[in-house]
Amino acid sequence: MAYEAGGFHLASALAALTGALLIQVGANLCNDWADFTKGADTASRKGPLRVTQAGLVLPATILRMTALVFALSALSGVYLIMRGGWVIALIGVLSIAAGILYTAGRYPLAYLGLGDVFVLVFFGPVAVGGTYYVQTLEITPAVLVAGLATGLMATAILVVNNIRDIEEDRRCGKRTVVVRFGRRFGTGLWLCCIVAGALIPLEIVVATAAHRWAALTLLILIPALALFRQLLTERLNPLLGQTVLLLLAHSVLFSAGWMLG
Image (cartoon, rainbow, N blue to C red; front, side, top):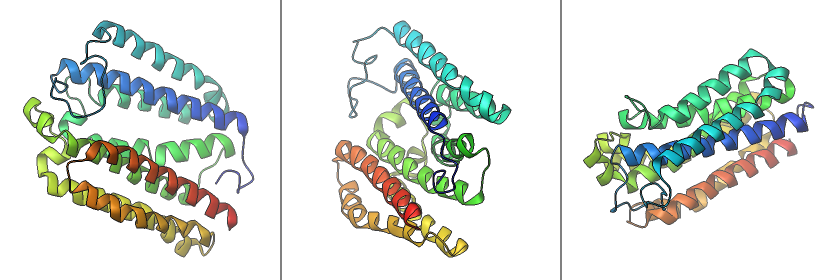
């Protein structure tokens, strides 16, 4: 979107990408430590290997790694702050705080059932809008709405994770949305996130009377139907990666369609 608007800025795009990746890694390390110490990760865990629970890395080492990665993410943001000002500093601080407080602290977001909301916001309008802003030094409603579609797709990934871990989360008091409202609600939420994510670009096309090819994101509904059937089974680990690929396909289709006009 920044390129099409004539504002593509390679250095800013790469700095934003680096910062986002480091914050994600830091958040995952923090989650690895926090879920273990809170008893959410046990020997009965169904998900991919977590090094703290598996005894491969000491909890104190994970904490030091978390601090280092978040420090590196802050360092990568210095250039962006110089370019974009205090707004970028605020986004960086809030993003790191959300990554830490997602599972750590006295009132962790994921344990309160607020994880989905924060993933929607920070993986959506904040990430897309922030990346666009540091390049063009402006923001438009279409960018933020497009970011909402990305956030919904990212939320669908979290929903799969929470459906898979529903029993373990319930036992340790991790009150995710799926724990609160049940697996059936979770499968419906996944479907709503995917369908809404696919439809939002069409809404942008209708509202702006431009970029009609951005509606190519509707094509993701074809493989999504097969994935929804799989969601009704117990084979959820493969579905986690497949939902990630669905998000990637959505991003590629939208970007290509936006450039085609």
